[in-house]
Every structure is written in C-alpha cells, then in structure tokens.
Length: 424
Image (cartoon, rainbow, N blue to C red; front, side, top):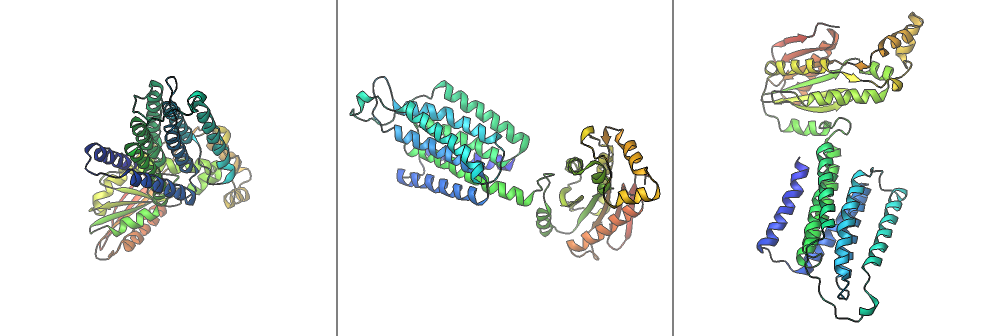
C-alpha cells in the first residue's frame, strides 16, 4: 500500500502548491523539471530493463508535445487544432496506459520495444492528421490555448482507466500499476489546465517523476521481496536482524518432504505449495514477521518475545498449514519419480514407485506439513546468528522426531517445549 500512497502524496503536494501560489516557479524551470524527470526516467527504465515504464514515459512525452505543438497553430471558427489535440491525447493516453498495464514485461530488447514504438508512431501520425489546421487559415493570427471543459469522452476514458489501474494494483500490488494510476491523474490535471503553460507542465513533470519513481520502487521490491512467494527476501531478513533488540525470538520453518513433492508432481506444483505456505505464514500472530529464507525454508521473527511466548502462535500456524489443501490439475502431474528416490524404490520392490504414484494421484488435493525450530536471545545466544543456529538445531530435532512438529529452545534452559501433531 505504501507504493500507492507515496505518489499520491507527491501529487497532492504539487496540486496544493499550485493552488496556493506559495511556490512561484518560472515556466522555464518547470519545463526543465519535466525534461529532467523524463530523461532520468528513460535512463532508469533502460538501466533496469523496464520496457513498460520506458514506453509509458514515451506516451507521456508524445502527449505533452502534441498539445504543445498544436496549441500554437492558427484557429478558425470551425476548427481548433489545440482542442482537437486535447481530445485526441485525452482518449489515447488512457488507452495506452491500459495497454501497458496488461503488457507483459519482457525486458529491454529491440524485438520487444519495436512493435510498441511503431504503434505509438502510427498514433502520432493519426493525431497529426486529425489536428492539422485548415488550409484557409494558415496565415491567421495565432491565439493561445484557452482552458475549456474536457469532452465527456475524455473524462469517461480517464475514469475507466483509473478504475482499472487501481483495481489491478489492489490485485497484484505492483508499483508499476500505482505509477500508471497516479501518472494518469497528473495527466488529467495537465489537460484540465489546458495542456500548456506553467500549471500544465508542472503536472506533466509530476507524472514523469512518478513513473521514474515506479522503476526505483520496482527495483526495491525485487531486491527485498521474493518474487515467487511475495514474502520479504533473505536480504530483508538480514536487515531486520540489525534492528532487533533483546528479547526476541526467531523461528526457522521447513516444509516436510518437499523434494519428494517436486519429484512426484513437478516443480510447478512445488511452486504452488511454496505460495500456499507463504500465504499462511503471513497470518502468523503475536507480532511475527515471515521471510523467505531460501528454498523451502522460511524464517519468522518475533521482536520483543521469547520462545515460550510464541509457541502457541507457531502451533496455530502449523495446524493452519496442515489443514490447507492444494487442488491439483490431473494432466499436469508427473508420471514417474526421478532421481535417487526412483532408483531406490525400484531396487528393493519392483513396481512400487508406479503403484505408490498411482495411489497418491487418485486424490485431487495435496496436503503439506511443516516442521519448526524456534529459539530466543539470551546469554548463550548473544547475537542473531547464534539464535538462528540454535533455531536450526531445534528444527533438526523436529525433523528427527517425526516432522510436522515444533521444537523450542531457550538460552540456558535446553529444550523448552515440544509441540507435535502426533504423526510421522
């Protein structure tokens, strides 16, 4: 939600300053800010291989240039190139933002950029044809663009695009969707102010800054969040450890028999299992924060808690995961074990692997369990690394004692408490 609020706060601050007149800025400085934000955003998009942001900035630039160019052309009693440009940009800009929202990011390569660039060129030609002045008034006196109410079609397109972009952000929580939404709002304000001049260019500059910020926000998200599970990544976990103060507890959780799941059902199903478990980990209570530690292993940090204080929350989490079911798509299941497990099963009992797979695949649902080891800070665990090592040892005990259980250790007290589901 932070990536949605931050650009909105920026745009609100810009609108407040424009309305109050507290910050008088020259038109030249505003235009410089727009081009600076545009170039910076294009370079960031190129550097971080974000073709969608690059194209969104091109759409914004072409829209601003179209209104600026046609606002200086002569106007007749029957035709105003400036008003035609406002209407054309007001329809095409939201449509392009919608297209870019649904466009799959494939990196910054020529074969990926070229078709979209050609499409934008064709749009520019169409706008040039629609907005060209009448030949009979080529030598008429040019008038500055008057601020007129935007056509209903423009307001409808912006409203529909805004609802769609906001919905997609709430569904997928991608900074790019948030950037498009607020850049769309800033562009609407720019067109409302006539598309040219200090006020309009300030709004266009805000839109460019917002899109450039979306590149930075996306890069941060990829660096500190796991793409598969959407949980904070190991890097975020390491930084969280630096902020911890005694007391605190750390739990290390590991999926039971995850390799066997991948061998039987394939890695696609394995990824679904990881996403399912991650969604349950986000529900952990008692102030816990879950992280993707690596592979099928997760870490949960409980600031201000001890091992004994988080046992109940971890037991609820373990039971929640055990009760969860993953629906399988029958045709996608792997038909045979692979690797050492398959050879070992066949060597001792011929045909066992196939029969076992057939027995397992009769069910359309897959259940998973998790083993957890937890430790807290204290005299023996003087650092976060010590707590993690102690929690790892507790996890190994949970695995050794039958899995699907919790082993808790507190510094100086040995094994504190064991919780188990009673199954091996």
